[in-house]
Length: 120
Image (cartoon, rainbow, N blue to C red):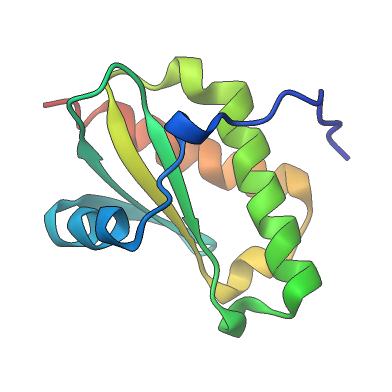
């Protein structure tokens, strides 16, 4: 299991409002694998921002919260690798509840690497 260091993601680095998610979904590029869909678009800020969507279809509250913790931790540890300033929404599929945190991190790594190639 990967240990958190206690340094979370700050509020300005999160997508929080419904309007932000709606705008992103309408104007975004996306990449996907069997566990996650990552929707992203360039923003006019000086930093990437993260949103996470995990529906009830994915599992119960414990499962959904675990997925959100894994995504936040991955972003916190790897945001410096993101070239460009993007609004990013990670959407968990049902398969995200299967497997280990290592597998989830590998999946996110692959998808975030694809985002790097989309710098506009």
